[in-house]
Image 1 (cartoon, helix red, strand yellow):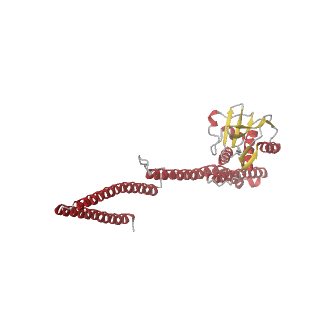
Image 2 (tube, rainbow, N blue to C red):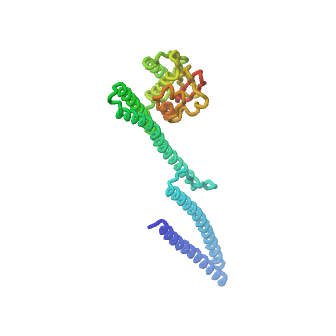
Image 3 (tube, rainbow, N blue to C red):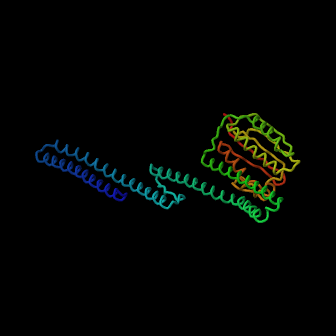
Length: 350
């Protein structure tokens, strides 16, 4: 049975019910009037009093019933409007549309607001999916094109030139590695978008985190001086492995954008209810124009493309997503030509 047919049958049943109720009230009034007339003719004033009671009760019920009908029709009309708007949104597949919210605060306006919030969540989800597909296709196009170019060279004359073959194979290997890192980063971002990162949070000491980073930095510092400054002892609620991954990414960035004689400094202190761990360098810094978009996916400045051409542009975006998934924040301060300070802000153990 269609929605229109069901609505028609329901309306017919309601009409019959309303007529039946009106007939009952009319019968009560007629019976009361008859009693009143008998009382007048017989001089029995008790019958008249009984009529008054019956009439008062009947009229009270009638008024209440009519008010209930008017109120129910109002709500039914609003519900039908919500249903029609929801169907229009579903048929158009346009989730950026919203249901008009009633001006009077009541249960139905709360329902409309809740439906709009649900549509907002759906829109965000669809937008993440569209952005993921768009970003992935755009970024994967470059390494695929490079590898195809080297394959064409090898097909043409690379077979007879061992040096050219070695260079081509090495370049394709580098692009394959870059593609692998890119795909892994995209998959991790997709998992974070679905809240499926698998965070194992617990109390973690600031000293343990900084100490581990100082130890690990021995193999990747590339001649840079690594030191600590103002290490406060505190504990944060976080996943230790994920926090170390973030700190390692920030440290590697500092190494890439700091000169061979540069200095990288770790510090840890508490600020405004957060445990803050900072990675500071005295390298090239970030321009004011680039500072506002460095955490965007695939965002790479001109200088970063020159210094680290194999980078994917996902590192800082991943760090931001990982930190925020643990209830924290990331902040950056930088001046071009003077260096940068990246700070992880994580919730303290209460």
